[in-house]
Amino acid sequence: MPKTIAIDLDDTLAATASKVCLYIEEKINIKFTKKDIVNWSISSVIPQVEGHEREMYAEVWKNPAEIELEDPDIPNILDNLREKFRVWIVTASSGEDKAIREWLEKKGVAYEGFFHLEHSVDKHGVPGVDIYIDDHVLVAENAARDGKTAILLRQPWNEDFIKSNGNQNIIPADNWRHVEEILLTRFVEK
Image (cartoon, rainbow, N blue to C red; front, side):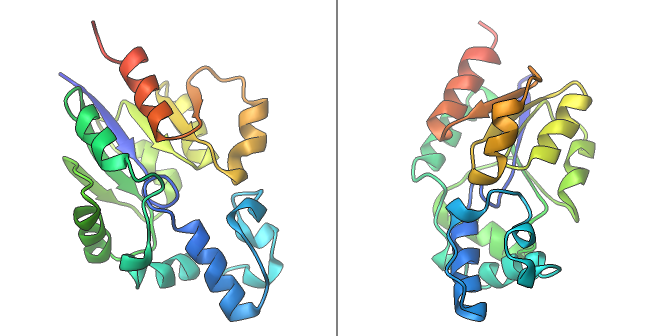
C-alpha cells in the first residue's frame, strides 16, 4: 500500500502570506513583507494584528483568484508523486471549503483526500497519514513526536527552528522540487 502524504495549504501550496502582508499594508498602513514574518505568529512582529490573524487569512481567501501557488510546478510535482503516494490536503485554513476546493481545481492540484480542520495542531490526529508536508513548526514537532516524518517547507518563520533542529524525523526542504526529491529518494520502496 502506498504511503499517504498530508499536505498543508496556506504557505505550503498557496502563497497566502504575501497576500496577508498586502492586506496589513492596506488596512493599517504598515509596510510588511513575507520576509518580515520571522515568527509563525504575525502578531509577534506587528502587535496591532493580535487576535486577527485567522480573520486576515479568511479575508485573503475571499479572493482566491488572486492567490498564487507557492511554486508553479506544484501540479506537475504532485502528479508525479501521486504515482507513488496517496496525496491528501490537510489544512486548518480559515478559508471556506468551497473557495479552497475551487482554487485547488483551478490551479490543477490533484489529490485523493481533503481534510479541513479547526486548528493546525489537530493535523497529527488524522488517521492514516505517514508523512506531513507543512510550513508550521508545531505540525512538524507533533508528527515527529508521533514517530512520523514531517517535511518542513522552508519559510522565514521556521528558519530559526530549521537551523537548530536535531530531530531526524523533521526534514527541511528548500522548495517543492526538494520536497519531491526527498519523497522519491527516501520513501519509495525500490
